[in-house]
Length: 188
Image (cartoon, rainbow, N blue to C red):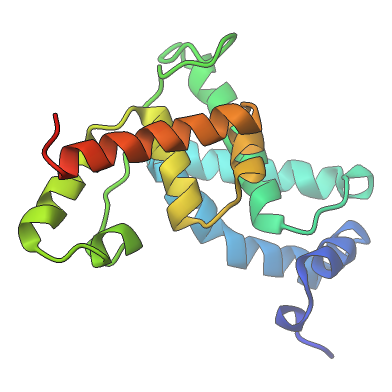
């Protein structure tokens, strides 16, 4: 039997939609860690993250025959997970996540020394300034930068996940990078 890791995302998704158990196991085991780590960035209770992921997969299995196509499973799952998590966060009345785009939600990224943005820096002082600049971004900017540079998603995917236009996504990331550069270059 051919290993699922030899298939592309479209083929794996099609197998899942057809009801092949090995496809759902593969998707769950490969993408659960990504969803969980992404959920942790929202600074919510671990059990809420786990419940949301379980609910997401239960819903996917239940509705798999009617799901749309995808050639990027991670994107599909991140978008669905974020929407479901936001609904759960809003239902606890801790966050107003309805209506207009808002920064009224937590999103915290711990930028590691291995991250590409930091690796490119030459000195420890500039790395420290970069970490400080990253920590001072708005939650939406942090999320967009995280999805763009850590998860390596394109602007279209990030815009869909965050429920904003591609232009707004580009502007959000551009402003974040501008603010980071300004802080790192000491032009506060």
